[in-house]
Image: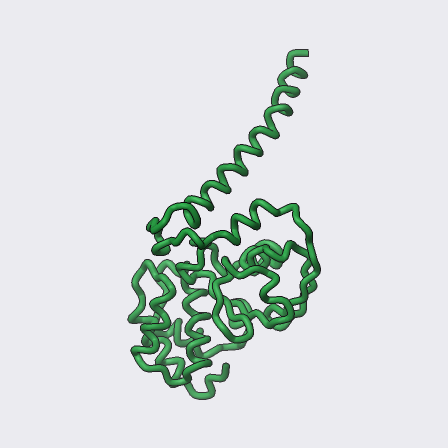
Length: 220
């Protein structure tokens, strides 16, 4: 009887624990990305208007789901989900494409950059609804290209150190080369400074982009 009473007590405590855990997650998101004006975190300066997508998504996870068609790395998907779900969650949790990294949640650091219709976007602040009917390219899609010049250049210049930001760096560099096949140092620096590299490998990144730009038969 005593054991049964303990089980009942644990069962009654479980909802309270889950409510506390959910509250903690929401507060962490809010503090990091929404409520603290000018707060500084490892991804840069966070403004109070950012992160609202995450708060909406966290609070409305039981909301209406819709089927949204999107092509990711050349494969068509019919995704039934909340339209407000961040693209980053769709890639990592639903499709298990975990090359796109999770970091700041506010679109500041650029680590989660992917290409949508050829344009770089921050997947952490891009709702699923905004990519409906469009082509999304992630680092996995680029890596499926046998010996892509940009990837070969990254290896040749030994760009990565910790490597965490590199998917975002590479996808941003790809968009730059598609827009400007022979970018200047100034173009490279202006573009790549928007993707945080805590290891400070920007000089190697610049050399790798020049190498890829000069590679024979580089393609897209």
